[in-house]
Length: 371
Image (cartoon, rainbow, N blue to C red; front, side):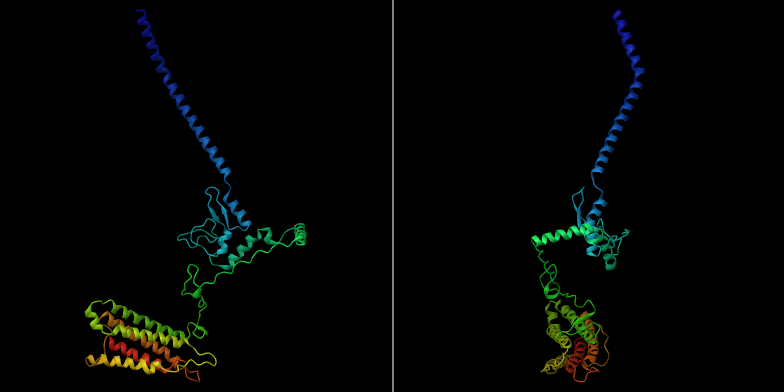
């Protein structure tokens, strides 16, 4: 019995102690968790502050780089090579790649509101900013002290007396690009020469004229005519069936001959005679061969057509309508060549023979008949 009473009493005492001590233990547990969280956060802040102190300031690195007139510097967190403002200024224009130190305010980035120190492509502003950066370098601004200049002069005298320093080899000449010299990415002939960037162009004889000169106006009209004739030729070649070949007959071959003659006319117009040298053709092939050939083609086709008693609308098939375009462009080319064939201020004959005008006049009739 005593044992039973002792055991029951012990259980009741334990229950009483647990019921009173549980809130206290719960509060102690919460406080310990808060202390552990506070210590953890403090350790993170300390590690972040140590990391921040170990990484140099980007602007300081950039300022140090441009003060040495360096084009790049190494970004410490990533190890990447970063272009400086000095490198961007030497290029002169914004590249549109959102560069970190772009002095042009990302002008070529769509939707950018970033402000730049200079305008992209403004050479005067770029040169002014480059001069400011070069003034930061003591070797460039020429403001050294008298003692430094004297020491440098004495050092130079002593070194020159002992032995002369070898001069660095000259920089290789910059590769010329354009035309037959190729481009920066290819050695083949390229169509650009940059010779006409100022609004003038060269003739076959080497003489230069403004691009709105009557000679270039005439050559441009003839070139346009040759291109629209090429469109008709391409449209005909798209018809691969036998019926189309029979329908068009020898028209593709005739159009090829016409395009060749138009190339000849452009060459004749561009061959302006120089002093004491005449460019008149010794044998006028247009008068002897090409004009009579056009007339034969016109006669042959007209003989197969009904009698023409009214005007025709420039319509029908796509090829017929495009041939009417050839006819109207040919008339314009003929009008522009009149001032070259019959100039008002020239004593002798023009370098373009009258037979060229006859050929274009006959050619417009040919296009009308073919259409």
